Amino acid sequence: MAQSALFSQFDLSEDENREFEPDLRRLLELDAHVREKLLERLPRWFVLRIGDALAREFAEQFGVPQSTVLGTLRCYDFFVRNLLHDNNDDTIEQWVTDLTAMLGLHKEESEQLRSALAPLGTLPLEEVAGQLARRQPGVLPEFDAIETTVELRAVFGRSFILGERLSSYEPEVRDLVPIVSMAMSTDTQEHLRVQLHVDDLRLVVDKLQAALREAEALEAMVPRMQRALDSERA
Image 1 (cartoon, rainbow, N blue to C red):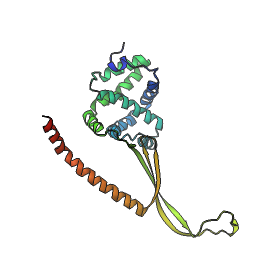
Image 2: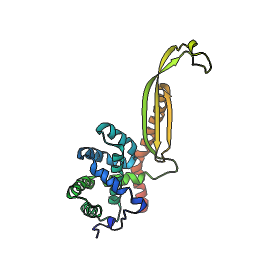
Image 3: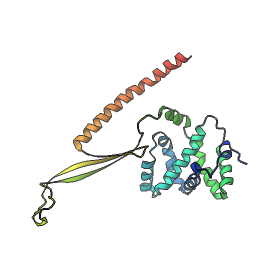
Image 4: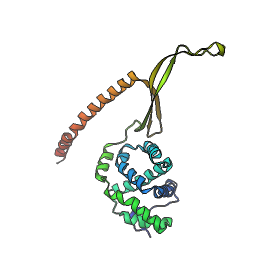
């Protein structure tokens, strides 16, 4: 019989839970050093949901398959959200005991799981909960990740015209222009892909910096407004 409230009601055969065991196995496969680095980024990921970007970064830096990183993040997401639950009185040790029995984990796997979950108890959960509460879903897609590349593009004197004789076409490079390509993804898997000239990029950066200043000005007002609301409630 399960010791924890969480796993006393958990059914691995349900459709919504079928990825849980594969994700947990990915968590156990992850090298302890890589897992430690991932845990350092976990609070930020919880708020910004930058899973795809983290997966690419860890794949490049540590040679870890992106599927392993994403599976580990989903697994940690499951456990942390249950730790944040108001009615949760479970302990991580109870979870380890229950999962060892449910999945038939060997002693070594059970110890790996304990080592993987133990650091969750030291995460700044109240801070994460506060930030999550402030990020209420809106009607527009949420930002997920952004990628950029910069390249030099040749400017030719004229383009080849379809139908003309190839032997008469002589490409002439008249200039080299820096081009920035940007891809932005959202939580709905929608993607925006654009290319910008340097002047365009400067305009975008200026506009975003202006928006950041405005947001920081509002952010500075939050404590005073919160105190006013608390006074009204008292």
